[in-house]
Length: 56
Image (cartoon, rainbow, N blue to C red; front, side):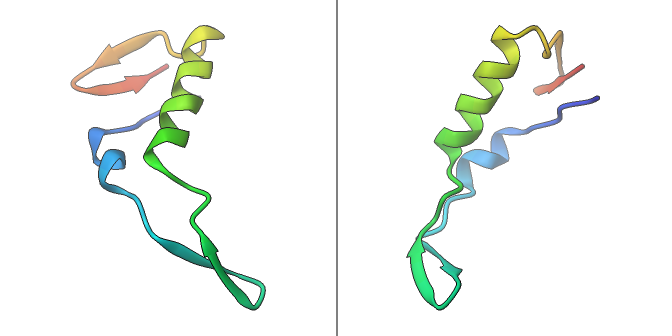
């Protein structure tokens, strides 16, 4: 499986999202992506970094 990410994810942050009938703080954040990428890297799933993208 390829994992592709760019630095553009750093700018992807929203204030709120709709869940059921309420507006709540966003669950997705740039920090969450970094945490997931770190875990994938530590587990050996990310094996190469090319052109600013991680891929396997």
